[in-house]
Amino acid sequence: MKLTAGTNDTYFITMTVINWVDVFTRPVYKDLLIENLEYCRKEKGLEIFSYVIMTNHIHLIAKGKDRPLSDILRDFKTFTSKELFRAIKDNAKESRKVWMIGLMNKAGKKNILNTNYQFWQNYNQPIIINDNRTFLIKQNYIHQNPVRAGFVVNDYDYLYSSASELSPLIVDEY
Image (cartoon, rainbow, N blue to C red):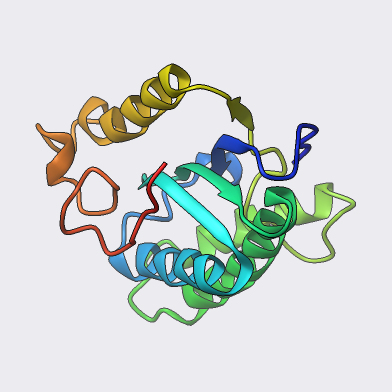
């Protein structure tokens, strides 16, 4: 991820699973992401203004409070890739385990930055948010993602989104 603007700038970020694999169809994997995003909020100064966890990617509007967002996301992706790989491997109920691990191993061998496997795609598609209009456009895009995918009729009905009052992740005010 290359963020070239100021350290405290706000960005729209997309983090995508390699090969667009639908890992986050199971709550256990989404909950792992929520736990780690919350950890980054509390311990690393990540400010999250909007988010959604889809089946194979995450969208965030976020910034780093005390450190560069790129550093926080690098640490988040490194940690969650290990934890998610382990969770998939150790999940006795995961019917797609062999297939997913095979894809991750194959992707890791093609990438000189990894030694064994790769969970996340390398690029996060950062877009700087420099005004309220852009923020609202990107926030609407995030919140409408589950609606466009056909998961819910109303954005506020999708639990793993900042549009939901029942969201397990607390978001900051923009």
